[in-house]
Image (cartoon, rainbow, N blue to C red; front, side):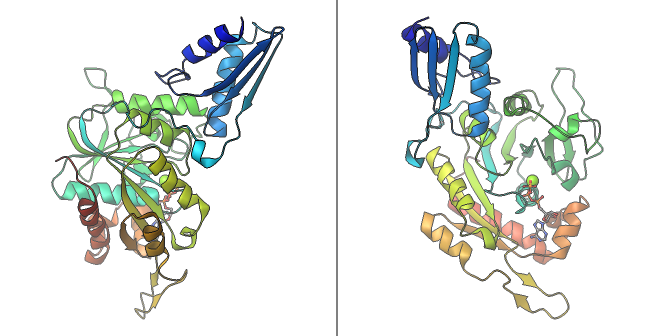
Length: 346
Ligand SMILES: Nc1ncnc2c1ncn2[C@@H]1O[C@H](COP(=O)(O)OP(=O)(O)OP(=O)(O)O)[C@@H](O)[C@H]1O
Ligand SMILES: [Mg+2]
């Protein structure tokens, strides 16, 4: 193979688990073949996708050359190529709107927010599904009290989603024998599983599909943006992370991959002592507002750090259903603000 032939073959190679080629995803930066030695430079966004693509190339072309040197192009933020997310596929034509809930860091309350936001939408009379895209740490079944359910198929060979609190629920946890079964998947496998959940689950018609994303800005976020027309991105953060690069990275990623942003939710925003009613701004005030202003996105809500939110959520009793009126209102207000910020298709 010469340089030209290898370039063509690489561009035609499928990204593992996706129906897209490396060429379509614009992942090949440079190719050079001389004396049967090949040099390939990749334009991947994350280390995960670099390793996935590298091993796919090695197993396809490893025997063709005396040596195969695959490197990753070091790039400045601006040059990141996120593939074809400006004109995404639509793997979920049954959903009128897709809301992606994400955060730069783990443990900030994404899953809790996703569930309560989805239920608040259902409480307004909409048909809502929630997809747990956090395949490595799926929490949605526990939060919705569906964690004992097992996977079922209907007559058309589609997976039947769990249902509770007015939501249709799909999580990889439904497919594992016990809730603590570890999932040690390559990201390409995780991505394929999620695509299957979009295509092979009997969601029915949905007004909203809410996606609880894993933390960070990796392959799964990227795939979702390429495979779904996301109507609105919601970023969840905590006050102490507001100023951090992780949050900025999430916002920048949404902006770079052309996902319209509904706004920012500051979770665990402050604490009101239940005995005295005194409000403590443990991490200071105004962080969420400043961040929202800096990126010109709405601040959708500030949800306090509250023991009942923690307890209810972890027991599968979502505060927007079973909490006090005050707790319910935090999530309902977020939904109202989201409707002000985004023109949904209803
Ligand atoms: N406003 C809140 N007040 C008190 N506890 C909260 C609040 N929001 C979330 N929690 C608790 O914080 C913990 C982490 O929340 P959650 O699992 O929703 O975060 P996450 O961002 O989805 O985490 P991961 O990155 O692991 O998926 C949970 O125990 C949850 O009950
Ligand atoms: Mg989570």
